[in-house]
Length: 190
Image 1 (cartoon, rainbow, N blue to C red):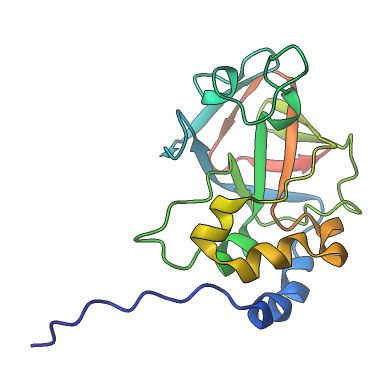
Image 2: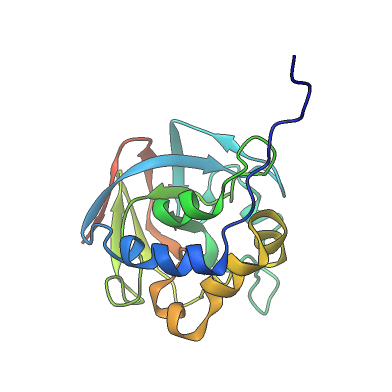
């Protein structure tokens, strides 16, 4: 009987990230199924739900944004530009390899869609269920948590100058119309 521990997949290398870029950029442009909804009650916590209530005033109802935002306005209130984060599924699949031992990236929505600046300029409105989102001017760079979980090479690749317009770490949005989004709804450009 083999008693060895299962092999943990290594993080994506720089070469693997570069090789995957054409496929990532070939994602659909206009509409995509919302494949996952992640609710974040606190730092590092993930709760996958069938639906989320999105509000202009409170963000995702019950989420940490109102109490513990990572970005605030000068008055200390939560910055609405970070209410919702959307990650391209193809980037998640490339970088999140050890799903048994490494936390989910924590983005609100996972979609197979081109989230790049050319396709979704700042101010673009997106229908998500009955809610409407607006693409923020706040760039999602990834952080030390991304590096620690998914590797230095993928973090560098995300933030490489020539890759920044592709928004490989995803797009941040503010909520501009209250509504409910459900797993399986479509994210659609308006």
